[in-house]
Length: 97
Length: 471
Image 1 (cartoon, rainbow over the protein chains, first blue to last red):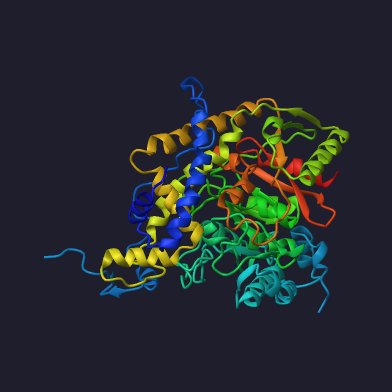
Image 2 (cartoon, rainbow over the protein chains, first blue to last red; image 1 turned 90 degrees about the horizontal axis):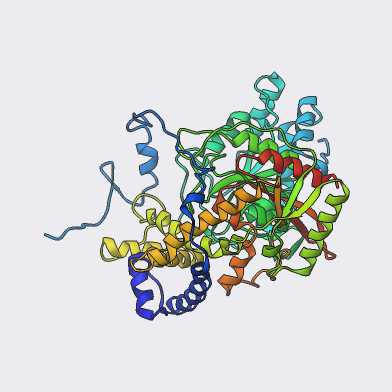
């Protein structure tokens, strides 16, 4: 069901550098996990009329406005960044000319 | 120094002793530091013991001496799972990705506990980004079970449960996405609560699967768990899912529902089943009623969880890009930086779940897996809502086995996932659940009962758990 090229594609989508050995193992593991979760197809459909109108979830809003005063956390946050330049996160050039 | 009887100490008795002046918060903290020094190398429960524990305790002592702002938690030593942020302290989620990360803010639960004068002993070991059921996925080695150090502590909050069960902390915080507070509590003989979804703010807890995650207490008894829950719960402008609700009056005698058809599917150790049935018999003798409840969709829960959880994991883990914080490995261009950083920073189980999540969310499979799982989640909720129209609690064992040997399940992810069979449905539905110890196996390993309550009914779970403790 899962081919090696599927694993290669997923790794690209997920931006993960994986060794060939890990990909082999993943192909096997995912086959067995996907087999197990395919059980779901046997579950009955939800009847719309019986939908629980969410007992647990509730949106909580706050007033519009700044959650934090601008700049108060900048220094502490940038201190965690691997590379910083002039108060910004630094990354490699993204666009070619 | 006064010799403190740590074994029989609870939050309440510690508080009373602190206020009476039997011992100081510094002496109490030092007693735990001594236990940690004695046992942590063996158990690997703490990843870091904070250097300023005595200073924190001195501040608590000053409050107690002044008799001002004294809370029941003032001066109480607590361990914190390594995925809950404390400003200025390292917080790694037991991952290589965040090995050198220092939290830039306090989680809401930490802010609340700081205000009460809690003494934070250190940060506890866990599975890498809370993904696992045994703490074997920690980048810093497994946590051992305090009752037998060749066995796992359970997980993912294994460090917190081992610390409390092994007497290295009076109490702890954990987080629970599919059983990560309750299952290690079962293995380590502690009481663990997964609150109603939204009862406790998730702000400052590293996200794993945001629609399932909750922070909760791991404690020596029900009373302590309740004290901590009350201290950390409540609405929070920084978590749009956190809300307030009133406590209700709990019944004294319980109508206990058992989903026998779910239980009888096999896979449960006989010793677990025997202990569970004995507990039910004792409950009946104590005047509680035990009935069967039909919950025909519960057995889809684990499959449903292993679609929704990886889907949310793959999304949440996308933030680790090696640019803003955490590990960074250099490649030849920006894209290669991502691949190298993420490939090396995440542990094997995290990588596996990101791959699974990417698969179930990809075009062509989205409907068959993700959308179907969303519907099944609704069926699981309906099963609980229907059950709670006729019973007060739904009970099963917490885990299908007692603590298992380190290394036993590491090569078979599906077998490891099955450890969560009884705890996962609760996170899908968003209802609260509590694990309470119910004795030990012949070889001395803790066993536990898992009680699920209706939305917002932690009060019933605490009352029920007390009834178990009094059997």
